[in-house]
Image (cartoon, rainbow, N blue to C red; front, side):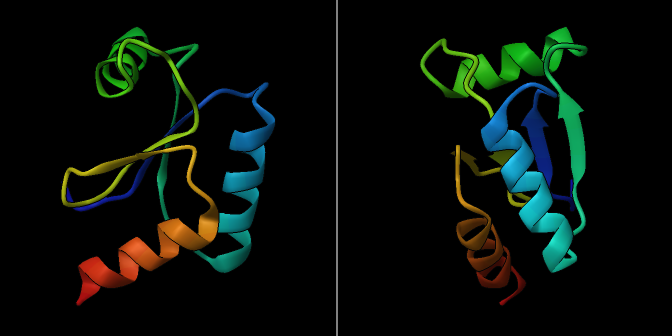
Amino acid sequence: MNELTLYTTTWCPFCQRLTSDLDAAGVTYVNIDVDEDEAAGEWVKSVNDGNRIVPTVKYPDGSHATNPRARAVMRKLDELAG
């Protein structure tokens, strides 16, 4: 998988801010609504000690972050780009 994936919900203000900031910066990502994708919600719980915390971000290298700021996401993507 060579893409940034965001696990979000439509009602979460933190999700809205992250997607808005990434959009403004021109960052490309796949957005998965965990309210509509049960398997995605289960994955989010698996990496957050059983809690369905959004936004959760999965980076192209398979690592993840919970509730990161857009700046941190962009910094990680820059690191991965080398």
